[in-house]
Picture 1 (cartoon, helix red, strand yellow):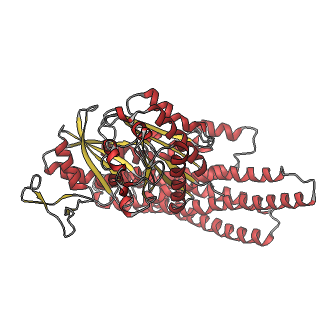
Picture 2: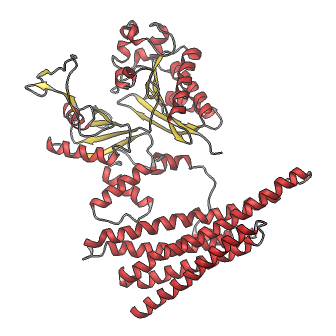
Picture 3: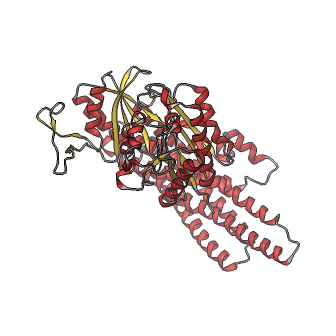
Length: 564
């Protein structure tokens, strides 16, 4: 069963004292199974965003330890900073990452809040998906009045805390309150201006954010607020949904920024917020100089940004993730204020930083030497997959060269589509390089199971049978993918850059080799499968792919012979 993973992103009200920050953040590393992903302090805001991930129960324990340590080390009565806040651990949201629903995450948020109150004696509120009422969903509403307004807030029965003591006491004076939530993945994203004006930055934030600005009679800045029938101020909505934003001045950098919370990046992405900010700033005579990510960002958000700017440039999208990320960094100006290291800022990269080394992580020389060693894996199946990956990489290269050829600009999308197909085939085949070796190791693991009793023998026999089937299915997938990938090379041989005709041909021959090599592996593994119906079915399908591949190979050779 796949692990349930949730992310926790507590924001603590300390951004200047690194000794305190590290002492607080490192408490989470004492809980087995929890991984500390990021510590992102801000001097001007005097606030640090800490990110860690793990299974729910462990994350709850880690969060409690962190909140306790923050309350010990941070005295809110002495705190100042640019960011709105009301507690030492100001907010502590839980975010579902994998194999867990928002509903289940909300239950864990409620458990965490109760334990904060019961075990630590700290009061607080639930917000967003964990909110106990609609008027507590919005964090800005819950945090209104900030730390300085807590005495008055707690005297109002309307604002009785959801957990912890209900009275203003010494603990509140020292640690303030904590807001706990379950929410979607939020991207904290700041856009930099060539200005020091907070007022100008706020004007842009009001243009862009969903809440927009208050409608005023006459002068849009100083005029009297226009009220609705209930006495609430009417608003002029902003351009983008699922966006919160304010303007501020950051002394650390000497510039004004628009600070956004992108609360649902499937509705409004980073690049959409950036582009809309550029438009608003330009209208107001300002220039966007870059932007800044606070905390971590999902890989897909960076790839989407890369795609957006490539499309604007009419450049092929069929390039590697690494190249797309470079485009995103430069286009969004994410390195404007400080270096942006994808390995430290993209959540998937950070989570996999200490993962076991894969075959595809080897150098070309290292892969060859690993193959030539005494170990039985990697073997022919992995090599077949790798040859197939190299083949379709050649076809993808021709597509990308064709997309950027002078005079062919009108056809860039045609070639980009083929390059994207090629990248998808390549990524699948690279996955299968390691998966073929993993499949072989599953057979070995099956044979190592105990066989002392009849029950153990039965379990062992079934494990070996299942592993052998899987070890046959993987090279069959190599066959399927490599055969299908030949469409890229065929299309490029016919319509791509003719100076690269030989590259398309070599790519097709690599794919053909991958198909035949994987076919050998299907056949040799299928002979050991006890379920002969399964074996006969997969062998028949494999032979069909083999036959069609030979036909395609001959077609490619004919095309090349006719053009060279």
